[in-house]
Length: 577
Ligand code: GLC
Image 1: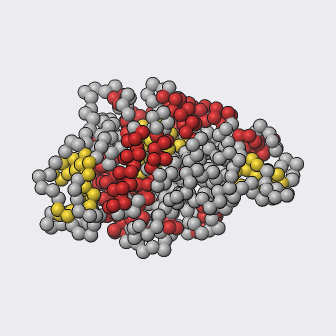
Image 2 (image 1 turned 120 degrees about the horizontal axis):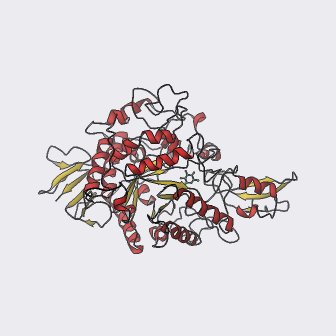
């Protein structure tokens, strides 16, 4: 098993530990910790299963907090754990202020938050404000109350088009495939209004012009903040406002194609920002300010993304442009420059993210030819040739690049193990609604959600306790024996030890985390930049080895240097000058 020694020291890279700190989090209470933090994403149903039912839970998280603390991260973000019919893995929330019994109880959640704090780890939850579950009492009441009711005003109900209303109100499509509207049967048994769902039909969109909706989410945030939660990841942060009159999308695409007008009828409308200004005021009303990170899929428009992180709005936003940038030096450099410039203009720190539960894992993305097309889901990868050894080399180098960039970074569970996307989950086991809603064309996101391998020789690889009554909810590949935490611990060239070393260095080195970077001269295909004081990162994305500057000391390297002590292709190095 990994070293479970809890960490109680520094929270910010480079900060010196105080002589005697009353509490691990007290030291940085007034500092803007989120500008430097490394935040670990826990996809709860696949992290660790404490009760043996094959589904991860809070008991599992609590049993692994020591692992997380010793990994060297600063905070956790936990995907939705609220009561849910699980039509979209918990993003269909039936009770905003409860815990799904499959995951545990509110008492366990509160205890977990306190235990994480004791280990110096902050805790972010997932807030899902764009929609509720169709099982939520509000939606059930809206169905029962009928056309024109106050209950329906919390959602987006509209009459259909055509003489008998049998056509959807507009041409909007669900993100998972198919129309974004479903027609209801009215209480009197006749077909009636349609309701909007930008995701699954079981996820009706809320109407953010409703005062009830606003009050309910404020109440929810306070509820969790009062239980010690340090902040929220805001699900679909770019979706809450819809254009007046709900005009057709027509030929507009999302992400937009260059030359498209800025305004899309339901993504990234200016109306979202006033909502976030209110939330910021609420978060700032706490003595130890609470923070937000926006999940806003505003791709290729860094200056629009930066609007979410203006001084009086959300603190940070995922930088998905970085995740989507192919493993090509010039592309990465311009993505990095654009993100830094756009964030600097509003005084925010950029974030860096390589993967999450919605995209194919980066080992598998980087295993494919780069720059051919945007690689997002498994379906974008399947027809491209794969070299997984190469994918792993690149993922190792990408980790050192990401952790050396100015700002905060996200690590999706299993990324530190170098897990690949699972590409061969049998059709009948796929759970992502994308699979059915796309007419079984898009295999969806399950390949990135397979339960973690912790230890042992065979499934469930320590994910569930001995004597578990059920197999993991998605099958783990046999090859994951080699990738378990236990198998990688102490193996010098393992991905896990690379992450541990990188995070250890990052925490101690004052040059890393928040701050600036300056590019250094480098050949084509090579990224080289300095962070002050005395830190250099070089990433070789070119075909040939490149010399390592003399008079520098190697701190960490993602692969072995050549016999001529040069930095090989697809390798990154951290140096002290
Ligand atoms: C976000 C979540 C994703 C979910 C969707 C709908 O994009 O990350 O998993 O399906 O929102 O809530």
